[in-house]
Length: 135
Image 1: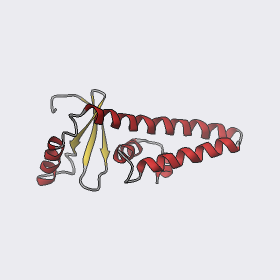
Image 2: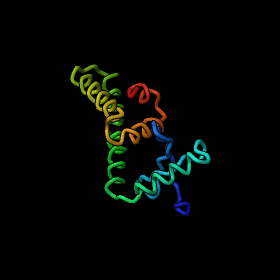
Image 3: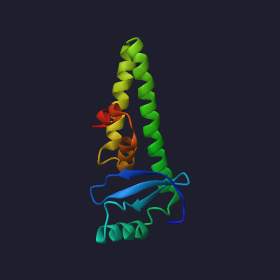
Image 4: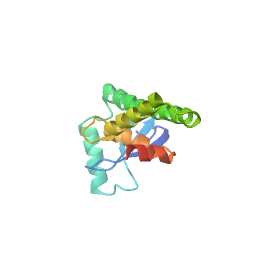
């Protein structure tokens, strides 16, 4: 895995350990976070990833990718709606924005599948309003 080129790195916060969600050749792989995982924590994360085959199961990689893309679509749609809403207010647009915010919040809740991927997307996004929406 070390020989593969990493295009982008994203930190994913996980209550049980810190992992890095990396996009390697357009696939979502989990690798230990080198800066924060030293010694036993890093070794434990590497063993867990290997033992549970977190990077070997294509449906798991696809599911991570789908959650990432869903977050992107929702946030891009919100941005478009917010721009239109500033020009002329519309109650239906306002309701749609509220619905998208609640869907994004639902995706980041602990009980949601792949919530760490959604958190990773929000963490890497540069727009401050995105972080406020998901908080």
